[in-house]
Each structure stands twice: as C-alpha cells, then as structure tokens.
Amino acid sequence: MSVSSLQSGTVDDATQAADKFLASCVPATLADAPLPPWPFGSAQQSSLPEADLADALIRRAEFHGIALLLTYRGTQGSDWPGPVMAQLTQLARLSGLWEELHRPRIAGLIDMLADRGVASIVLKGSALAYLHYPDPALRRRGDTDLLIQPEDLDTTRAALREAGWISPPPSRGLYFQESWDIDCGLGMLHTLDLHWHPTDRPVIQKVLRPEDYWASTRPLPRLSPRAAAPDPVIMLVHGAINQFWHQTRGILVEGERVVGGRRLIWAADYHHMTASLTPADWERLAAFCAARDAGGIVHAVLAGAQQDIGLALPDGFPERLLPVSGRSPTMDYIRRFDRLKDIRADFMAADSTATRLRLLSASVLVSREQLVKRYPQHSHWPTALLQLRRYGGALARVIGLSQRGAAYQLRHAPEKQGPRP
Image (cartoon, rainbow, N blue to C red; front, side, top):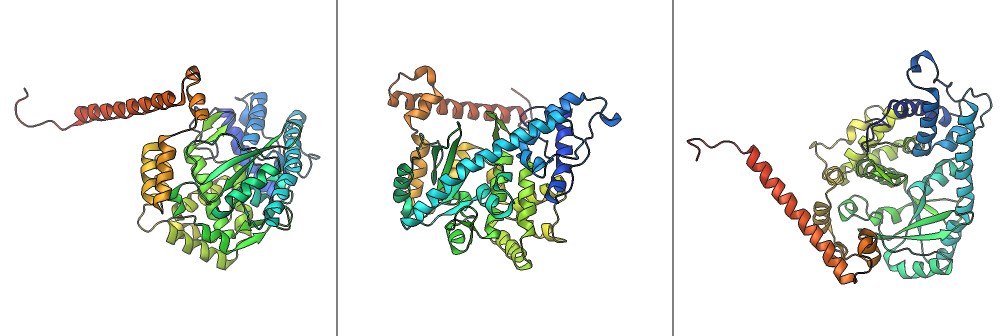
C-alpha cells in the first residue's frame, strides 16, 4: 500500500505523481541534502498539466504534514517554481506560529500539574516533536496527548479549568480520555487529549499497558524541565498502533474521512525513532511484540516506511516481528471496523466490572449535544425522545443487516438433491 492509495475515491494521476515525488524528497530533507530537482513539465510528465501537478503537490504536502520539512533549510538553490515554494513557505510559517503559540500552554499545564503532585507523560506527536526533531514545529500535529494516573483526574480537571481550558461536549465512544480546548490567540485553538489510560480501547489495552509507560520515561527538557516521554520501545509500538488505526479506519482531511493513505511524516518519525534504538532496544522491541501481539502491526508500518522513504532497518529484523501463527487478533480488531463487534470485543477484554458498565452506558446513552448534532431537524424534541429515535434507527439497521444476510444465504445456498417443489 503506497502513500497515495486512498480509498475515499479515485486517486488522480496528479495526486499519485505528487505523492511519489514527495516521498523522494523526505530522505533528502532528513539527510540535510538539497531538494530533488523539480520533475514536472518534462517529457515524462507531458500528459499532466504542470499547474495541476503543482496544486496537487501543495495539497499533498499539507496532507503528509511535511511543508516545513521541505522548506526548513531554506529555498535558495531550488529550481522548484516560485509560487510553489511561496505556498509551502506560508504553510511552514503557520506550523511555526502554531508551535510558538501552543508550547507555553502545554508547558505551563505540565508545570502546574507537577506543582500539585500530578505526574504526566507526553504521548505521540508532541513527544516525538520535542525528542527527535531539530525544530518541534517540523513534526506537524493538531493536538497534544497527555497521560496521567486515573486517581489524578479530578486534580487535573481543576487545573485545566483554572488555566483557562474548556472541555467541549464529550465525544461519543471515548471511555478513557477526554478533550480540552484553549484559545491560543490569532484564531488558533489548541486541543489537549487527556488520557488516564494510554489507549481508549480495552482490546488494545492488552498491548499498551499503563505500567509500561510509568516504569520508564525520558525527559523532554525542550518542552519543560518537568515534561517526560515514554520509553523508546513503547513509543514506537504506540506510534505504530496509532498509525495503523488511522490508516485503516480513516483520518479526517478537510472534513472528509480518508482511508488507506500513509502520511509521510509518519515515515519521518520512524526514521528518527529507529535511528535512536540500541541493539538492546531492538531485542526488547522484538520480545515486546511477540509477547503482546504487536508484531504484525509494527511490521506493517515499518515495511510501509521502507517502501515510502527507504527506511533503514537491521537485516532480517522485520521478519522477526511477524506472528508465528500468521494471525494477529489485534490487527483483526482494528481492520474489522464494525461498531457492534467492537463493543462486544471491548466488553470481553475489559479488566473490571466497572469498565464493562462504563462501556455499556456509553454505548446505550449519548449526550443531548450529540443527539442534536445527529438529528438537527428534531432539536426541539426532549432528550428521551431523541434517544428513542436513535434506538429505532439502530434496530432498523440490525434488522436490515439480518434480512440481507438471510437473502444472501438463500441465493448462495447449495441446491438440494431431488425434485424441486
């Protein structure tokens, strides 16, 4: 599966050409080498208008989160068209501005929590940004993920309110995390995803366990002297699962859910993360993947990065990650993308009765805000009636699926021997 294999619609030739060229640019930027020469407009690309290719490159560079990566070392000496470089530079400036505005809010919150005895761990993109990238703005992201202990949740919520953060209506289907927003100025809103478990799904909690995160951390001094990131092996596995989830179940791009595309910034992440691993870390990674059913997913994302940017890996290592049985229940769970089956699998995987009750409650009841958003034409209805409207729709879908399944079985059932009635 390539960086451009998107399933939200037909991928046009310009998009494919832009993705292929951008993939060739990323290794150059990571090696501090000049950008490859502009290839469009040559005889090989004569069937595609150069203006369309230029527009596609800008659009795809934004999707891949690499505009600043392409322009970080300056644009002098590049033969890329001036308008293209100007647009990329503008996107890069916005990334830099976002970083400058959001960093004080996150650092201030981490320090406030530490003053109140609350330990926290920065996860995913923000941890990568401050650990591995020469400028944190190079790691494009839209929010910050912060992990705390469950017993610190009330103290953390109070600190967030005191610091000016606002919690929007809860998102449906979230059990172990919640979002908080803050206005950073200049029309930029920053979102904090507050976690009291590393992952929201009980099935995946069997792979990513809280004790692994709290047992060993690394400092993030460029963010705050009191900020910390997970152990490098845990960080790589978490990133791989997060990527596989978004790649399989979709990522929102300008309000549209796009399925199947690998973002090139993810490949850059693995370049940095794998370069920092010691031989002992590689062995720990292999052992962790074998013990926690993470090998299939980690193999898939590392193989994707190899295909996209030529990621260097130890000889023979990727094959060691493949499950001996050839199957991965965790991969199957993510790939399935069936809400009812998700609920059942998470219910069975939950580690306590309280968690199971929370899962059932969240599945059966949703907030009025979510109901009104789903049924805006009935916003004047009482909440109880909106809930009944939702249940009726769910029941109709179940009956419809059952009827379609029965019809399929009738059409494809083997013929019985003997005379037909």
